[in-house]
Image (cartoon, rainbow, N blue to C red; front, side, top):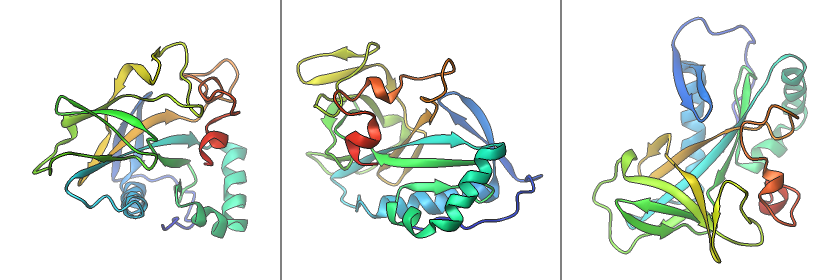
Length: 215
């Protein structure tokens, strides 16, 4: 995995693309988008989703950076670059406007062309037949397998062994046989401003998703 190194803080004035997210639309420069593309390609390769009988499902959450938070992340990146690279799941934009944490969709329940399958802990779905072609509209995530690491929350339908989402998740991107999901913003620590279920309510005896999955 390659973590992109620092560059100028000057705002990009051209080649801007709009990226639709769970909570709206934000602008990302073409330069940063190219960095994301390279990072995602490298990140996915470590999971070896290259079998025609497999698809991969991965997600990311985004932390928007501004003012002193941007300076803090700059300092951390400068002094702990090796540790960040070793995590193989942290993307930091070269202008330090945001960072992303990428992760497999652990034991996700997916609907692929009308059939239900389960991903393993690495976000890999083993299929009974070889895929000839897949499009971004063919797959959605409808829930996940219930476990001591994920217990569900009030907005879910919880059965003995499944956690069904109120609204299915749709992928933001498809890279070959790998679907990537925008899981929204990291904002569970902002009191009174939460736009999603805090992970502290979704992981049973674990404090949060970082503890549950070692992120």
